[in-house]
Image 1: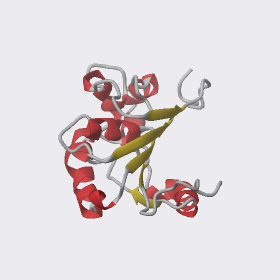
Image 2 (image 1 turned 180 degrees about the vertical axis):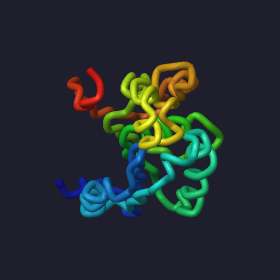
Image 3 (image 1 turned 45 degrees about the vertical axis):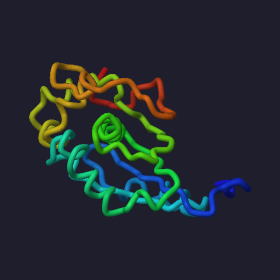
Length: 170
């Protein structure tokens, strides 16, 4: 990883990492270490993606964690999200809990238009049990969270592929 630029703020900027559904902050540890070496303060947040509805994560759980972080102490608060974490961030940013010092957001593999794989998985008991209660919210059907999200009005970059890696879908 490159060293921070010469004009990097004296006070560290903060990067919040949000994992995908069914995962844990551990999955983002390598990225966390790289960002720390680059000079950022990093908060790698685990959230109960399988048990707590996505709206409750974005409206209650995550804002409480961010308040404890005291985000006002940082010049900017950036986000790096993976999969469902991207939708959690978008819900957070569209509500009353949007950080006033919001910086940039990088989304890795976000289901920003919903995921047909989630709809496929919802038809199978084992996969529903594995992914948890947010499975319908990740799809493209009537319960999809993306149906009620406004377009991004914040600086965002998306890292996504164009090939399927999910062996369950064709």
